[in-house]
Amino acid sequence: MHPETQTVVLASRETVPFDYLVVATGAGPRLPKVPGLDVDGIFTLRNVSDALRIKRFIQDRRAKRAVAVGAGYISLEMCEAFRTLGLETTVLESEARPVMRLPEEFSAKIVEELQANGVTFMPRVNLEGFDRSPSGIVVRTGNGPLEADLVLIAVGVAPEVKLAAEAGIALGRTGAIAVNDHQQTNLPFVYAAGDCCESYHRVSRKPAYIPLGDTANKQGRIAGANIGGQDVTFPGIVGSQCFKVFGLEVASTGLTEDEARQLALTPVSATIQGVSRARSYPSTKRLWLKLVADTGTRRLLGAQAVGAEGVVSRINILAGALAGGLSLEEIAYLDLAYAPPFSGSWDPVHIAAQELLK
Image (cartoon, rainbow, N blue to C red; front, side, top):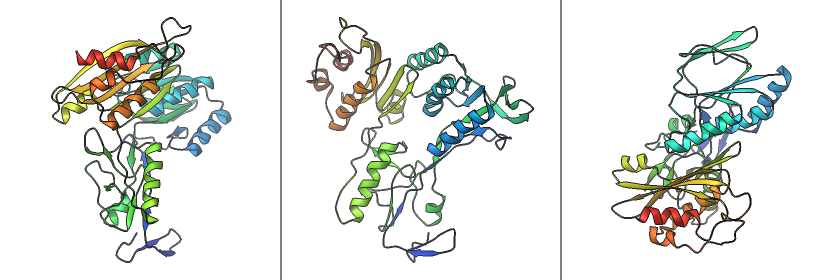
């Protein structure tokens, strides 16, 4: 990219002029700094093409043993895919538990779900490297070697910002491209959208890097609308996320207690056990919901939830409450749609808010 001449140079050496430029270079997988990453059968997963390559490898090699490095969303979701295809599956995690953002008791429920579905979870494992072996791949760890036919590395992503930085486009404190609410960079004719750039976090009121597909779509539309002559702003995010681990729904929005403390807030929390439907209704499932608020302002800061059913819908309610700036008192008496197949007359959202108000 050459902003001074408003041109980009393609790999073919062709020079293309532009009036406006959109940087949408996305993010790439983080890789551990260990030897042997070039061993055949080691994969990362960022797109459908990656998924098809993994599936083809399993079929062609008749793979029976999979090791996932990392215990984040991608890794945990892939465990279900591996087990469905009949693979013996092991998850290696350097931390004490999966998804460290979640409350400890919620992480424990994820481990229980993994184990109930035949997945081995190994915490506090130091990865040392990979070697080829006659039977597949040797995964070397501080706990000893493991044999695998396939390894998935899923330890997070990093924004692809090399080209942007070289062109003089400013990066934010997160390491991703800094943008304003029109998705403009520090160069007025250059916009950025998606996993390569930051988002304004409406709860922390600071730039954040939370690369998700729905945010990327919204940012892309905002950038395009402004380039097309409209005056449209992106209001930002509240950090809503969800994923599925076999029969378990896991979701969160806003800030955790630890994140709130790092922002010099004074968080207080309440965790309740609720049910997905009315207790008298057949097949109701248990769920756990944690709310976090600031003691000084009584402002809702965030929520996390886990359970077999109804988790994502509750977090979506609370994401709307965060975006709308509702008070805990308002959340405690929200007029939510009620019928026994969907919730009790007092929804877990009501109960959690009332518990926190105490």
